[in-house]
Length: 311
Image 1 (cartoon, rainbow, N blue to C red):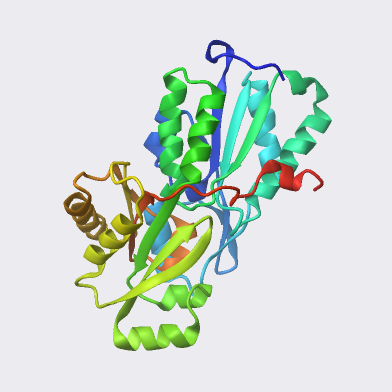
Image 2 (image 1 turned 180 degrees about the vertical axis):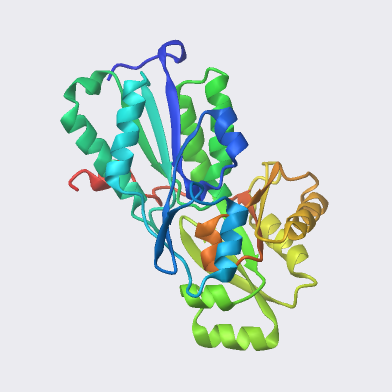
């Protein structure tokens, strides 16, 4: 496909509901968000279609079993590509939740292959770029909102892909759950360690980098948790002036406290406070708080489309 300038590009940003982008930001940014299927006590739902994020917290507390998410089907992605093509878009930039924790990136790539097989005429009219964010929640939701501003400012698709790729190569999430019950059920922390941790009142600080979760350290009790979380984020931040963003769960006051701790430690306020959706909450529990920072750049650590060319 011949390179197009910003003047003759019509760019569509696409993602999934685990990005936790607000309805307002979706509307203002013209971002298409595909809903993730989720099963609660044997009944199927679609996140952000059948319930809002706050409503999910209510369903989670009432659930008899831990809800389970599944990946968006390739047929769903293909239909979204069909719709965009019919609307005259020249570029689709589709960003998925980390491929380390979901098959959505693979499904999106397979859908692209099938789409062009069925629409060979689209090869010279539509370009589809699929990015593995290597992250969760605001780790890719926030840069997508920023990318939507770039679209409005007339930046090219190449500029936007470059920005997103660079962001995903440096983004790091640090979060802390206030209970170990959910991380134990999800397997993020071994059951025996979770039991001992609960008895001792330990709160793990967990990192998410390239989709991989690691317990960085444990803090005793809640009193110093947020302050320590801000310290850990600051210590691992390669660019202290880069924007930070706060994510919180059912307790908005935790997000506000996290924001104050960041302002004090970093010397600047977070760009936004976001409420976490199902993908994070199922694994961490409803009361959770965290932040994103820009760490050292990592190369070739996320999935690429060519990895699935033979799929």
